[in-house]
Image 1 (cartoon, helix red, strand yellow):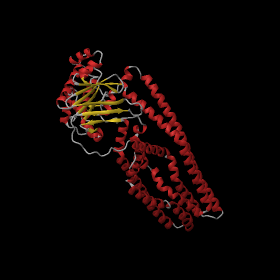
Image 2: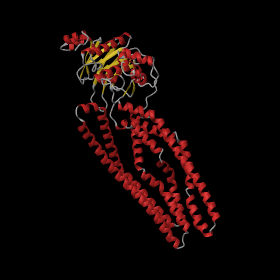
Image 3: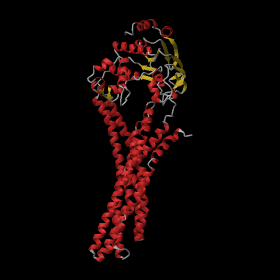
Image 4: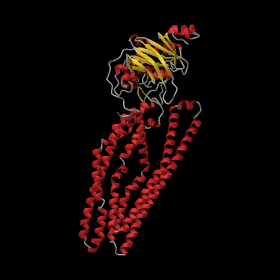
Length: 576
């Protein structure tokens, strides 16, 4: 049986193996491309040792035409393998896009985790490496010993010089890995923190401007940005040092090869053509190593991305296949529910028991921190219970796939967030082809239809998730319409009237009455008495435990000191 820890690495390897056939083609093309790399050295041998000696122009022309043809074939092979690797990288990313996106969203909904925040960026970093010339250098590196052996055939001293130079370059690569990893990680972390600070300030730009916080906000962001720049410069200094060392050493080795070759020519131990050919072969032998060092930051980023993806996918295994159940009745039963928030050890809900019947509304009250929002997250399946069960029409919530459960349970969170798109798309839960009939029906149930029609383009009015011009009340009513889309059997409203005026609260109560008449069940997490006007039942939470559960008026009478005043307020329709 596969454990969660093995999911991430196994999934990444499986996605990479999908292009195994393409890698074989790249390997075959690399074989012939590297063979054709011998064209230059052989051409130099023939020119210096034969053509110059025979002074035959016909031989020179024939050799030159052959070289042009061979280099053309090599260029085609090199271009083709580059395109193949680009498609292998695209296939890798495409096969994991949905899986990584789903894991990122699921993990971000329950906890703060760096891998969750950068999941898609990590996947793109791996794809970029797979499509880059750096990875193709892996197919070329096995030819390095063969090229060095070819140099050895010309003369042992030339081969020894090439081998020593290659070992020095490999040592520089290892040192580059050792010394550049830390600075690169610090630079990435600092850059990410600066980006988060920028995003937060941009999202709250109205408050920053209205409260005269621009200078302070700039100072805060600039401090993070300066740190990121400092770390980035330090990282570039380290990697740049090794790149410069590699480039300088390669040029020095080529000159040394020519100098040593010239010395051997003077001693009549090698021919002039061999001297030039050895220099060309050494440059070709060391080229993949130099390329790897020059693009080492890309390699490091991809390695970090691979590790982060492995961690993310291991912590968030794929959703298991579930038998699709028929549409449930609005019967909700909570048994000994205990919920521990992510990244915490203390339970926010302890042994909570209650039930809700079709056509009824349950109000959940309690002081701040009593566990109301935690209960809402548990009932929607966002947070998994640490103990106990939540049953919808006798079936545990785990028996429903998340997408299916989302159709049965509508949720209005305490803070409503709209997404970039039209109002119709937001109400239809980002469906790319929203059902206009269902959209309008949901808006009518939320008493938002007339309000939406007054907007510039009605349901086609575009809104922005980061800078919407809608008021808090308008966003809340659109959020309520989104919760009611597609006729869910359970509707959970977390502080639904926190941004509504008296008219909006009355519209909300009318929507709740309509839901009950249709046989749905409604749960309302509330602070304001007006929110529980339509509730027949009341659940009181105190420090995560059930303090009272029963008919609304009885709970108010037994548990609330100013019960008479609250009952009067509720009876009058929640007028504050």
